[in-house]
Image (tube, rainbow, N blue to C red; front, side, top):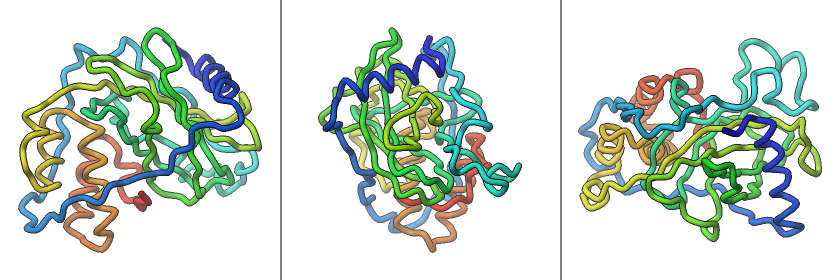
Length: 253
């Protein structure tokens, strides 16, 4: 499987391949259907069976190299500083999706970086797609996705997705990199049901469809930032997946 250095090499190589006009995608978040009556009080994520999970799903990077060198001050290197991290259950670093072009959520600390690169790699170590994404550098949870023009994920296939923060004008081997995994599945019984967005999140969670569940709930949280009931559901949901470290961070989709 790819290690972090191999991923950096592929990501950098991919930047040269796409030339001076890389595919650029804006962070996107569709406006969810209103929740109307708040019936659900708690949503708990149920992890799926591990039968189809890749053999190795360890994340690249470490706390010491998950920030740009120019951001490494006494404040940002304190033990309380949360590094860049993907919103994926940390015990597996892996999740399911029903989307051809899934949206990923990432916690981004305060950074001077102006852009990042999202790369997807197949299980046989081939570059699937690569997208350059502008960022504002504000701390909080952001959404990212590959460009709609990129190839769709194939059903039943695992992909490693990685993020590289571009700390300078061009990529460097020392730029921070994090990696996680995604597998596309088909669940027509969920896609055909008409539910409120909270009910959709709960249904995805019960089926172990992590990426669809977390982005659906994040969109609700983003559009209703002052709704304490939604805030509590969001916090409890992240805690149920082992993401309590960033459960109270602002959502900036």
